[in-house]
Length: 185
Image (cartoon, rainbow, N blue to C red; front, side, top):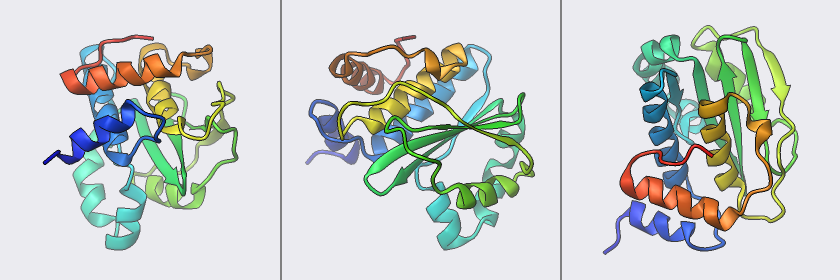
């Protein structure tokens, strides 16, 4: 019987959209890689807003408090029914960046603002980033992973050029299989 992770890996080989397992595991790898290059970051679970809504903030805030205070970047991937988007809080600039490979408007902003408020992140500038847009209906999760990889390596996700998305899917699969970020681009 295949594990959840193995089942999710099969999605990387098809034209299926990424699930929460892939995105959460990949962002975990990126944060570990970030530490190795001197960039402290934290990636929240794709379910963090729902968990806080269902069970309250206290448990999660106390668990993440120190990590959030020390992090330069906070990665917040969110599923907005049928689509993945990404928010990145950049502490140094006090900016909340919004990335949507589908070109949509900010989503779940009220819930996200309430979540950030729990960490005393209150007054910040919101910046909807113009990025490379996907040309299909299933690679939004892949773009979340690409955006995070570019952000940790280069600080700017707008430098993403046209990508061979099949190769990018294989890169994510390889990195998840090995448990290490291998590709800088």
